[in-house]
Length: 405
Image (cartoon, rainbow, N blue to C red; front, side, top):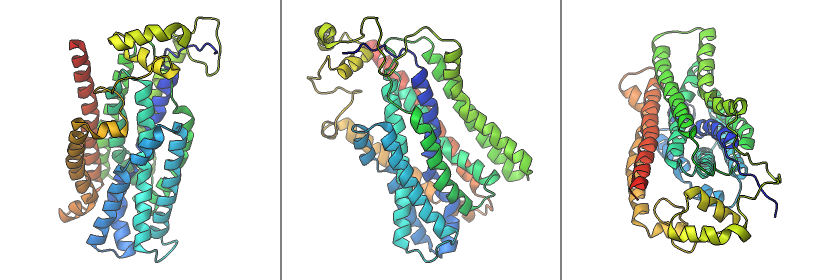
């Protein structure tokens, strides 16, 4: 068995996290429904009931993630992302053909199905990057999930800015952008999002890196909200519009400063070279460490990372049912009260939010707003605040509970 050097730092995991943030922005495509739904209604001659049913397709596609979840345990992240790319291209491609009137008289059922497939790409994108990065940072799962879902939440404001300043407020241009730009972006990020061996011990710089990433997304959210307000009250030239978009892109790429800093100022940690061998002692070999780690595992003395690495190397086999906070199989989760509590909370909380989102444009029109994009930007900001806040708070209480155990 070849000796493998453990990835102690984090360059590959942090590069993967930075790439995942862009994919999470792409995964917010379902939030765009209020931007193009009025055009879909007018071009196709739909009534409000038909438009509402299209909103149902939007919600089903966005939130049904059972297949991506199952596939994530069987296939690599690039395969999961590839399915999302295909779904996004096909689904939004059909909607663009309809709204641009490139193809006339497309049946209603086809548009309903196309919207469901298009927004289901959201589930494939989000599941691939969320699961991969939570495994890459096993001791900071709450923080990682909060950051990733926060970017997904703020994505609606990103799309609103692009829609208003670059796509000239055209629903047809927006759908073409979703058909081509999102797949290209995800294909470009696919190489960087892959499983990495987590650091084998506490990294003193990791907390600072997470704080930097959280600060970057908070500043991005504030910038997007302020910019959305400005463009509703002031008419901007093309040059100014492109400058504002360029500043947004700088905020989006700012998390790459972490792996760049690690490259310039390496911490001296060992880094995993895939397939590389070394003359140092192996981190884990079944012959030398199995008995020791098995004893630690049973006595509860091993760290989370040691157990994760040991299980990956086959040195330790799980012999007990998973505890709260560990990975569950589907049949194990279904018999837990926690699962059903989370399901009810998700159903009630998310359900009310997507109901408002789907009808945001109509709500704005009812209140006499000519430009309803500001409502989507405000919705996106509040959505972001709740997501990133919940991740930070949950991580705090998880660490607090572990300190008492």
